[in-house]
Image 1 (cartoon, one colour):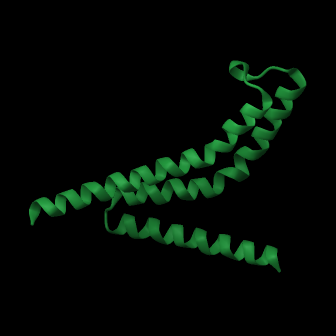
Image 2 (spheres, rainbow, N blue to C red):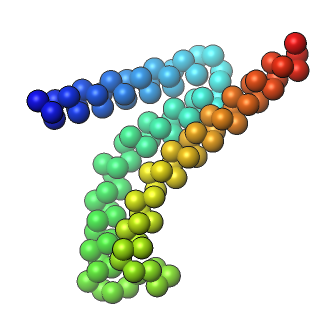
Length: 109
């Protein structure tokens, strides 16, 4: 029951993201378009990069070779920050775009 609800919420959220992407494209709001595009890719990317990250962490553990002399815990912490960084980038696009739109409307009135 719980897995059905999780899947259905994920599908609904993805459909809303696609709807927002289409609406922003239709109304020529490029910042919103990039916002929704980045969030859609953010929904898809964990299925792609999680296997690579886990293999890289396993390789780092067995070889003892980590980038910049990080410990395994620090490396995992950096990898766990990647989704939040993607979200910050997406929201930055949206905020800058909304600010520019608001600024252009206040100047003309």
